[in-house]
Length: 128
Length: 370
Image 1: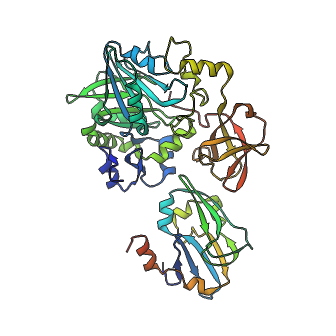
Image 2: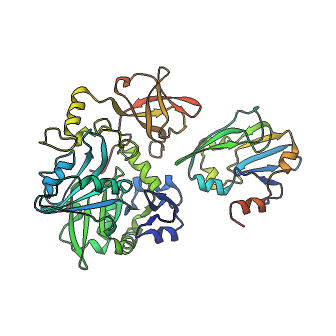
Image 3: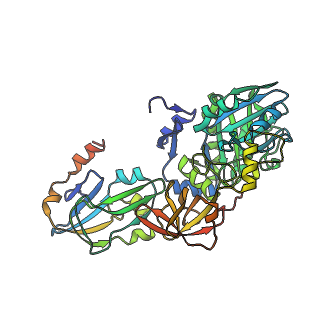
């Protein structure tokens, strides 16, 4: 997949901005899903909830550990990936595609622009 | 990390891409890919575990059984050669130093198999007993220990050339019995024991040849779909079967009676360390008791989370998991005995939330090991 419109956070989330702008899809990276191991449950924020960048907005329960899901950008949660309720393993299998978590309507585009690009993120996790 | 030990199988784990973690001072595989898939492989087929980090103390001498019997809560005085027994060793005050297997290999030789995290503490404890007519050796670095577990475990070992023509048929070895034999001049010990709730064997081989025997069993297991299993699935498997894990259900502050291990505490036995305290505890009733809960929903109860009843904390979670077999969020907890009530409404404090939980009998998964 192309990572042109994708940015990354230090907390290992990715954010993909739709071409039309405004709506951003959020997930966790392959590095993060690999580190967490088998994911068994995701606690989502409610649709309609207003989140601020870097707020914990949900939790990710893996077999061996639990992690917070942070909002990478401020905005309103418009959609959650309900497919993960039945099959949370999608996050492990397809972290950048079928394993997305939520869609957020951005309230401040500059927050997105301030996040890491793929090469910077890869460098952070030692993948470059 | 630098002074962490490696088991004789370490290089094989690493080459297969296992995720390695430091556990009890050893670099151990936590998973080779998916903990849940490894868990299912053991329930449905067969898995092989490197448990070489476990400790082995060899007690030798004509008085080996008497010596060990003073240390452990169970009664090993009548163990026939080849018999294995699960036990606990306690301090004077009745708290658990460790849980262990007592493998009565011969009339005058017993191997104590102890937890890796407790090897030094346990050996020091064992040395506090007078060694009349026995020698005790910490032989933990001399053995590699391989566990083969799952409904096809026997088929795998029968297919492995190492176990052919050893004078014993593996299908004649009952649960918690074992035997020794020689292979190319070296002693191999096999016991029908395990930590998964499935049919299984544990194989003690010389540590230098650990990797060779690992490969031999894996090769023989290929037609049966054998899968290497890391510590992650080892934990979820033992959890479903409600086997205690030291540091969780029992520890330096817990007595075996609290942890539901009364069946290995033989109070009628003449004497053993901790007997007086355990007799008193038995008479008065334990302060705490180990119970199982099923959580509503899918949050996982992690060790240390509080168990709440009528708004008050009555205990702590000792182990919790999403059970791959039962597909439920389950946990074990030590709670105040007075708060034990099958019909009460409990909750587990999962971070900032109280998740409703109902008491459910242990074990969660009925063992098929026998």
